[in-house]
Image 1 (cartoon, rainbow, N blue to C red):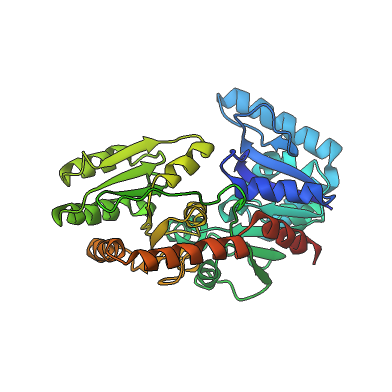
Image 2 (cartoon, one colour; image 1 turned 60 degrees about the horizontal axis):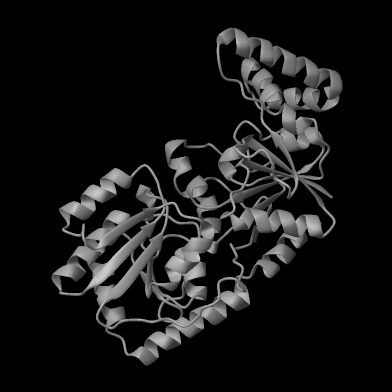
Length: 390
């Protein structure tokens, strides 16, 4: 089969979910074409890449380029673009938006596909009819923000989608439940395929854990949805209790300044280290130097970093945001705390730190076994092959 995957950008090295999926499909004999809005890389050897037209610049430049793309699209792919235009017209799309859709999707309509898969649901906006215009089936992935937050900003944003999509992919059961809050009525099959990691690479080694000083760590974008301010408030309470620790935050984002100031205000400047963005291979090393992983998100689809931390034997304390309570089984492979409650998080962290070592070892071993048994990249590859085959 020829499978088109629509993403914002070419996947970075750390985005193993997409890289593993593409490699798995290609190695199974399928052909994958990656459609992206922008590309900072000049080479991507995993599969064919096509970049969306860039319609920016002066009015004259955009006008000439748009006219050129539209003429080329209709000369070489007349039937597909005519179908796209008429399907949009049936949906009541305004004339100029119909023309714009033909232009902005010309990199996709130039290909012949069996499946067109939108890697994030937000990318299907104004592309709801592209798959049908191609004579292909359409799949859409929902991962967290696109169903938990985006519809709050743009109510009804998916109302055109539900009757057009052929199969839906979700990464957790909680994400599946959120679909019904946006008008989904089980029109099509929903398949859960969770994120996965390379369990051979993320394998626990010997850990030197100090009873006197604890190393907490979080890997996350510096964004409000990650709940990092609640984490800092909880750690401030631990400091008042006389607990010695260092907290390392790996990741970058627009909230860096706000979080840096929050750490200062909470008298944690000497305890919190903002590492910024680091190479993926260095993340394993940083995780290996920690003993407790914290992911106290307000909204979270699933979180690969939590899987990696569990595989490396860290004790994981997470919030109950969407997929996290499925990622970590409370009191079995880690601990799940109600979100948005810094006091509750602080209490749980103190409880975990004071557990008998035998209980810590039990939780750590359970987590490692479960990740290896249920979240390996090999399993993920097979599930995606089956996803398109059925």
